[in-house]
Image (cartoon, rainbow, N blue to C red; front, side, top):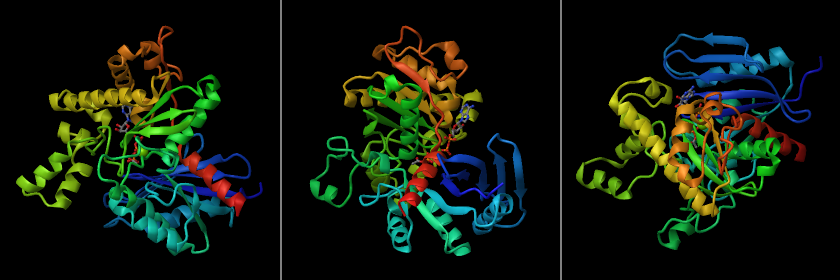
Length: 394
Ligand SMILES: Nc1ncnc2c1ncn2[C@@H]1O[C@H](COP(=O)(O)OP(=O)(O)O)[C@@H](O)[C@H]1O
Ligand SMILES: CC(=O)OP(=O)(O)O
Ligand SMILES: [Mg+2]
């Protein structure tokens, strides 16, 4: 078998790095996927084939994370299995593109440095997205690396959706609403057009409910509003992030609770959201299984705020015809989808209990005024498509 023309895609999240290897000779096809877990004291590399069978699972004992070494192992595994020189490029999910970057592009040292300078706008994500870029260029300096931006899909967001109600001079300095999860929204919007072309032009809200969570309002398949802002801290309740909060709380904490700026940042990014409210876990599965009242309170707040925000997006769109759930919670937690649907019954949402429990693609009841779908996201495939386009243009 000839060596494939492959791209390795890295999706660096807040707790682990997912990756996919794609053959990009034609429409990208997944060759294998896996997980790089640098957390705790035993870095772990797991590789599975496209069907999910484990090809490689190695947990190395040893003190401290050693991310660079894990990347060397991934690259060696790929060459070993798929042939020397098969790798054309590495694609990365970069969370913040700032005002200057939206479409996929080749990461030069200059671009990487400019993206690094955006770290204050996504402190939880940006360093974790960029660390693999450095690690890989140290191992294989000649390998092309390509960025796909989470902010890119919202690039055309316009006022009033893009504006904060602060003086315009701040906007001129790039302090505006950007939005995130764009690779996921772009993939899901494309998939929606494939599986239900009649819905492609409908007023649609996509709910990406994962560890991070946000909504996107789509008109004619394009983003016209979203719940995240300058940073991925705004909007919905998330695993460890607070989402929308009275900005007066931040001032109060600093002025009257004696908290330093860094402590407030840590509180809002790492200790809030589902984890903060429940005092138990950031993981929706754990909370749904718990009998602790505080766990229930966290789940109820998540549902309340998600439903409120969907209605807000519907107002942007001047109505709602289609609602799509995606992300770890959106795809797997039927209880959460059902409860959000109940709170939106007044809007004409009716989720069919049996279809929802079975996580079918279409979960609305026949009498629902709004189509409700579950579409699994695939950020890695979206990045692979972007990489293929960049390589073709080179
Ligand atoms: N079967 C399930 N039931 C409820 N929640 C689930 C289920 N599977 C995954 N989740 C939740 O999905 C969230 C992680 O979402 P995911 O999109 O995978 O996160 P990430 O942003 O890290 O990619 C966690 O809160 C997890 O508990
Ligand atoms: C932007 C964002 O919130 O990403 P994640 O869901 O991976 O945390
Ligand atoms: Mg995610």
